[in-house]
Length: 420
Image (tube, rainbow, N blue to C red):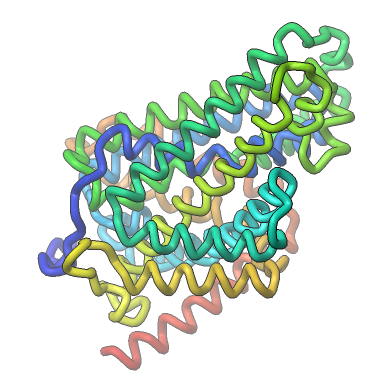
């Protein structure tokens, strides 16, 4: 145990309430997944992707409870990176932190580009790329003020939720029962593949654990926030997916890169098209804001242990935020946005996320019995679920993820050599 790792001079400000934590979790989950990935899943399994959605939500729930159990006992920045170090070993801890960084940085770039595209459809000013750059700059500045960032996130998430609920209630009268037949045209194989894809849409709840050092009463707040977030996300995804299938069918969902826009175009409810476009924009902003929050806090934790240069452990005394991590995160996302995403990194994202959560569950299994709020069965089921889904991944995806991990350990060796 390395309890003295966190120097009091580098403590962050505990200002996030239960409402803030839930907002950050939902902001991280309700993004590209609900607006894009549901269409891809519909193409893999037909209407039966709804079963895959439920299965993915249950496995994500197990992982979420493991994260909550760990964060309640170890309320420090870094999430699974920190748990891996404390309960397992430095190798697994670093692996979790590094995989988190590369996957989230790449995903943040994609989300920034997506925002520019959606906002340009709503208001055709400037160019999509300029709009993407402006969003990155704005949210990087917002991250300098953690309380204001929490408030901004709540506003963003509220707009997204209202737009999606408006779509759901507008679509209920237009649902056609025949669109659910045949229910499972691709059998169990299609359902399993859809579940593996949809699992990644639910994984944003980990942002709450990553920000544990800034949450008030973390031993109470974090478990509650994680449970509220994951249950709310499952219900929302299920409701939106049911309406989308019932209105346009899974074939049309699969043929579109923005299936909810197709649904909106089918309805005659006042301003429904504009509302859905606004919801898509705010969803992207919410994910991007939470990505910068989470990545900068992971850099802080890794800087403290010199797995990254120690400059990242600096905390700005006035606002008590890891300002170097925030600026560096914004700069990297901006660079990736300007040059375009790296498909190699994106392809390995599924493997890196499964590795991250496998380590989370192993760490939860290693906790003392007195620390295990939910017992051993929850992390055991979470680990089994992660391993089961990883088996279905293409070999190329696994190899690309492992190669990125090797690069990370090489960089870690150099950092330790320089800063020892």
